[in-house]
Length: 389
Image (cartoon, rainbow, N blue to C red; front, top):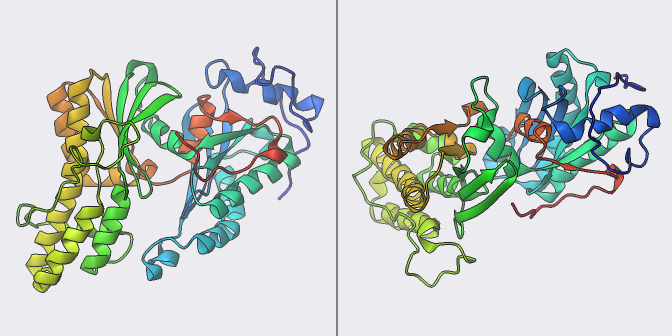
């Protein structure tokens, strides 16, 4: 594809880099760089997002906070035979899929490279090799186009995903916000005081909720990914048929890193309980018994999450409750969170199902809202697989 030499200038009064354009950026491109500090308040910002942190390859274009194009290539079929994500395979699939997805996203948005204002890329946390594919692509695009680059925290993208829809509320009206962040690799409660000002107040000490569902689905013979498989199997089942542990750690000796034990949880005992239950009740893997077992296991995960949400709402007054991440697609969890928010008398913000799983739209939108880190020297940008929130 043909890349541009230069693009239109955008007026914006506040420079992103106090000393001017980053090294290697042509003087004629300075206007493109200086728009970033005021995203998206003073000038429309067209952001190309790139996401390759795990097993979804994604590219998107977001303009002034609204999604113009989004393309995602799932690797579920590639990893299903192994029962989980194989890092090296994930990296290879990103290399194969990303160039085409970038072209498709621009086509869907009806834009040329010269129409863009910023490139946003997930720099962490995630699988190191997978992250390198996205960051490398962003660096190459910067070198070819002169577009400025922003590094975005993957979880910051998830936190911002509730503001992607056309009916999204004004972010400044929902803070402080309590967010239940539940995905395949991260699970916990985040207190968001203002855009970009957030902290964990409780989290899992071992498996994430998505991992617990994946492992439970494997034990039940339901396949991968486990969350959707267990949700399907649980339909019509009786969640009260068996009482699985709810991940309580309060009063134990488990280290919580200074977080309130009442807001932390552990899923390691849950999958062990399921293993022993299936050993003693082999019939639970089929028929009506399978539905009941899946429903009971799913309810244990959701109960554990919702109990912590309720406890956190009892400690502080929040303006809103939110649910983000891949597990937030679960219909039962969404329903339970609705009940909790109604009882607390606060609005519930749920990421739309398409924005719950990993995607580049949330990365581009977060950068466009000023939640990315400007990269003065894109060639020096490195990945941060364990980037703290």
